[in-house]
Each structure stands twice: as C-alpha cells, then as structure tokens.
Length: 339
Image (cartoon, rainbow, N blue to C red; front, top):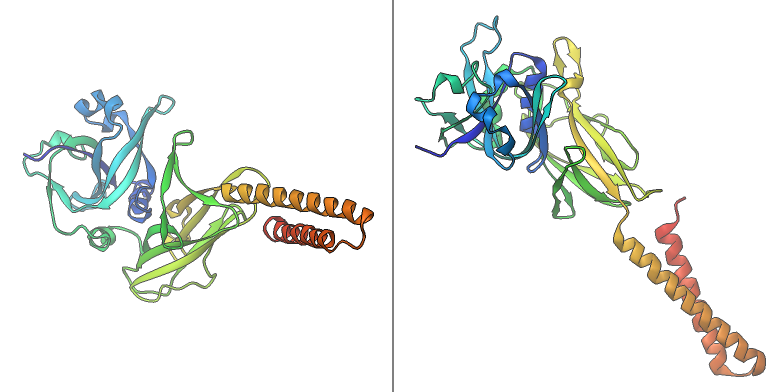
C-alpha cells in the first residue's frame, strides 16, 4: 500500500471555502496559504498527532456536491501538493489553522478501500493513501473543477523574477504568511498563466497597498485567448526606513459571483517586504570614502600651491582632487537623491 499523505479537503459548501481552493490554484510555488478547520472536522488519529504535523506532506482536495441542496453527488478532486509550515490552534473559535507551503499540482484519488471515516463529510483533515494519475498540469486541475466554480478567470502566478533569476517566497514565522523580499528602487517581473473557462471579454485588475511596491497591470488589460500568458512589471521605490511590508491584490476584472462584481473574497494577495539593498550601503560608504580622499588631496595641493604657486605637480594634484570630489558628488546625487 502506498505511503499515507495528509489530505486537506476544501468544499463548495461555502463561498469562502471555494475561494480557498481558487487561491490554492492561483498562488506561486513555495507560497503559503492558511486553511482553517474545526476540531470536529479533523479525523481522530490525525487530531491526536496535530502537534507533529509540521513538515508533513500532503494534497489539497476540492469537494464538490457538499451543499445539502446542490443535488450533486459528492466528488473529490485533487488540486495541489503541499508541505505543512505550521499548525496553530485558535481556542477562541475552536479551530486549527494549517499554514501550508504550496508545491506541484497533483492528480490523485484516495484508494477505493479508504474508510469512510477518513473522507468528507465525516472528516476534512485525515491521513490516507492515494492512487496517482497522469494529469498533473495546472490546466488539468483547473479543467477538473472549473464547472463547479463561478464564471471567473483562473490564473496561476508562476513566479516573481529579477531578470531571469526567480525570487523565492519566504515564510514569515511572526506573521505566519509568505512574502517576497524585494530591493528598493528595483524592477521585477510577475509571470502568469491565465485560463478563461467561458470565453468572454475580461482581464486582470490589481490594487497596491503602497506606492513602494507596485505591480503594474494596464487598467484595460484583456485576456487575449482562452489560454494566455502575461508578464507584468513590478517597480519598487526608494525607502525612508529600513524595510516596509505591503501587498498587492489581483482579481478578475469582469468576474461576478452571486450577482456581485469583482468579489472581494476571491482576490489573490501577494505580500512584499521591500528592503534597503546592502549594495547601496556599501556603495554609499565607498563614495563617501573616495570623496574624503579627494578633499584630502585637494587640501594638500592647495597648501603646497600657497607656498610654490608655479608647481605643475601641485596643480595636477589639485585637479585630481577636484575631479574625485566632482565624480563622487555626481554619483551620490544619481544613486541617492530622493527627489
């Protein structure tokens, strides 16, 4: 029998649960997402080991037909692999919060002999064995569940890049959320794949919480085909402090859920932590040291010229000192002027 994996099930019984599954399909590899479960929805043996689950690998499943009045047969569809980054109990509301780091997409199904006690609606968190399938691509997983979702654009943030170098997300243990570390006054790329289940005129909209890090998507952006790719620029501005945390939200510009346009619950959040680059600090120190050297040379030459005004050597040193001071001043203005 295959090794057991940790199974987390997100169902269509509530809009917020469906939005969780939508985000599982949208967020970039390595990024973390929070899924919440009540104690009664965690299988007993798994609940007894809840404190040992950090680092455990598993798969997120979407459960369709879990609404009492849906008239649909309950169906389990695998979405994506993950690794548990942390599990925290919130005694105030009686839930366990799972913080999971997203991995590859997965085509898998619980074995036929899996006990009903390990599956919805009896349990939404359990450990079980699965049978692997061949359809592990992102579009395969989207097509497997799109019919159960509102008419929204599915998109995958493939990653954030600095030139051709990927920028990895980091899990912040204090906030229990992922974030991308960006340098100030830099340019990055957000690379995306998009799929519109029902072809219609739509596009991606964004909202940036701060001007320090802005993901720039044209206001009239349109998805060019049913399956499309897009690259958007991210720009960071100069900081007045050591670092700053902020976010960007992305959503389907023409999406509609339950008669509401641009539904907030379905927005995808990317978190940034913009930092002052160490290279700039080193450059600033180097330029200041060079400028001080130029001043010392110029002063030495000026003292010599006062004694022997006709000395070509001393005049040459004076020119060298002035040039060093001028070049350093120009570079300091170019790299560090905040206006």
